[in-house]
Image (cartoon, rainbow, N blue to C red; front, side, top):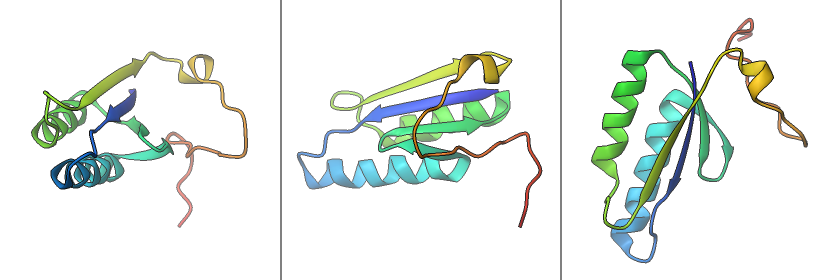
Length: 96
């Protein structure tokens, strides 16, 4: 399934800036950045639960915001893309 992860981490303190880096790092481990605080992640149910748990550990719920959007299949009908960024085709052939 395709998951869109968005977050807004308060960076007013040093601890907040560290949380921001850690949240981004967790997202980078499973997805691709499409905006500064927006990631697309192609995951199965178990990976999604692990991602959610990992991010909830990192954020401070009193200061930060974290949102997950499940994009239902078929994703090509749900996501339209414009501009110069081209996302990774998770279903396509991997070229190394």
